Length: 247
Image 1 (tube, rainbow, N blue to C red):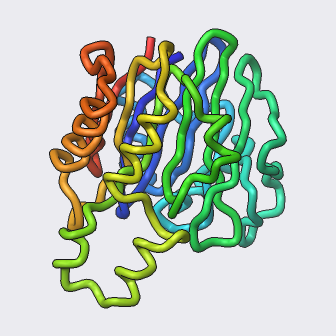
Image 2: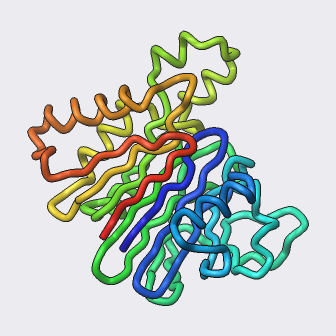
């Protein structure tokens, strides 16, 4: 399995999951031009995509959904002005060609937010962003994946020092907001295992975090539990930086 994080952050999110037979786009919160340019850089086009999967209804995840008129769209919510999406139900797995996909319920301030676990029969990839916490029920689904694309949104002291209004700060740190660096690191330290090869820290706030702080939080936690960090590739995603991963 290969994966590409095309964009990650509050200005837009989009990733690509590629197996032997299947190409899946995950969220489309960027402009049509950016998506097309990124695909071209990777030697793909929109015509190569088998399906678009959406995590939730915020604009930074669905901005360009109208571009995907000829591609099946999977979502756990109803899209405005569109009635042909395929319903996603948390914990009910479905198949797209050679990839089995399990959606899991996340906790965010939308009607329905999901993460996804992708399994091509030989490797598993976990995608979890935009959640205020990860339930114990979900932990069992996240254990020992090969690849993690996982939210590490903010550093709490840095968030509190911003000029954002107090209600927004409260929303971000709530159970319906986003994971902070320490929470992400603690959850990942519980979930990764012998199969784990790569971790991408995602949805990093440009105002309330830095890529370095997110990485350092995870590395500190892994050193604390004496995890052999040298066996991992760890990335911190930038807003518009393409990350190439997988085999």
